[in-house]
Image 1 (cartoon, helix red, strand yellow):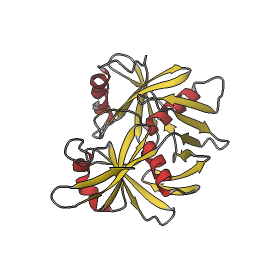
Image 2: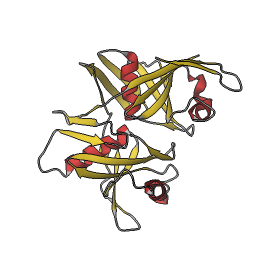
Image 3: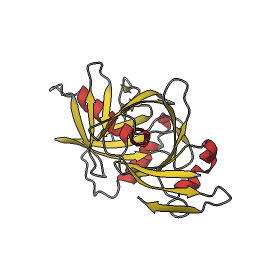
Image 4: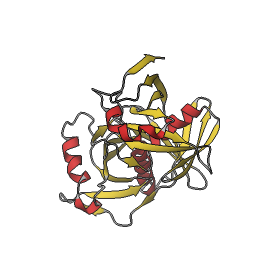
Length: 259
């Protein structure tokens, strides 16, 4: 079976067009014994859209939405305009002069912020998946971010599924670090977290800007634009890293070549 390895702003995925791999996700994502990735994208037929996207985290659990994966799918399909069904709702993507753009199904905020144990406020934003956004001084070199964020990620107030955790800071651009549930570590970028950050900053922005740039650990910028319908468009990099063949037996033999 053919697989494709994509990355979107440093967030990497294995893309396949066969749901038979769904039970092997954690093995495929293992960076020592598998192909290695933050997650697996499975493309399936859709009744209402051009394609259906399913996204699995590296632990094998299925997520409802992933912004960086969405752009990888837009690039993979190579259509000027495409509609994509996700578990969180239908999205649209397009390629304009080489730029890859996609919409998120919705963005909304819980009414009340969460007061954390250290009295900081966490803002719960739903961008198809839940993100707890915390305004904090962001230093990409601080080593204890994962440990701090992991404690919040498993807070009982967020139920059995827990929550993704991001620290953000405005410094011209929006700086962000994200700990992703399901991956269970900090990732180089998270599209839905960046969208949540842009949404929250815009809500508090007296300048009423319509474009916001988010700067993640990968240093690959993500831009978010709000149109006249208050729909959020995400623009960012995505690329095909390589493709290969999987022998689907007890283990995977991988034959691949860099393109």
